[in-house]
Length: 195
Ligand SMILES: CC(C)(COP(=O)(O)OP(=O)(O)OC[C@H]1O[C@@H](n2cnc3c(N)ncnc32)[C@H](O)[C@@H]1OP(=O)(O)O)[C@@H](O)C(=O)NCCC(=O)NCCS
Picture 1 (spheres, rainbow, N blue to C red):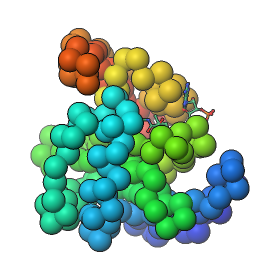
Picture 2: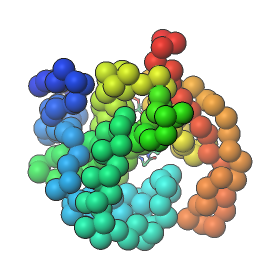
Picture 3: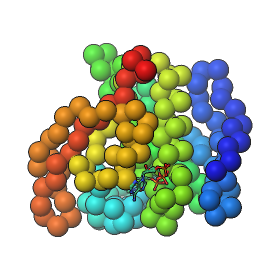
């Protein structure tokens, strides 16, 4: 992939980053905005059908566009947080973000998350989202980035480990699977000041 980083503003807000996918298409990562609400309400539930490794079971996500718009407004205003979308041919095909706990006791860390539509897996988009979140985490002055991942989500775990996330513990039978069984979840974290 060829990077063409356009700009980062001094406050660390990430502006559009454009790069070329392995199949030659151009892809852009930009900040999520409230006006993405309608498209997110369409794309996000698709990812829950395509993957059993996310926080929603298929069909569970039922937000209206107005509710999603309000959620985006409230969540993105809660610092340190960021929302990202990845756009190909004018359509959102992946999302990522970092969400803070607003309490002073926990504001030094933020939880990372991401999902890519299946048709685009293995093309370098997940890594690009994680690198963008990582750059943002540094510039936002995070002490710690956290995330939770199913213990058998080998692709995601390989990605996170390659970016210096380490295991913090295993939550046994923590999340319900689509097949009715419970899956273990690994908590991972990256400590910026220790690198
Ligand atoms: C996990 C996910 C985000 C990865 O995104 P992606 O765009 O497919 O990943 P990339 O192509 O950028 O690959 C990045 C790295 O992930 C790892 N990886 C990706 N797919 C893999 C697979 N099938 N097996 C092993 N490792 C894999 C590799 O380490 C790869 O490293 P490389 O850059 O040296 O090739 C994506 O597959 C996805 O959305 N899955 C469903 C939802 C999900 O699991 N989200 C994460 C919840 S914690």
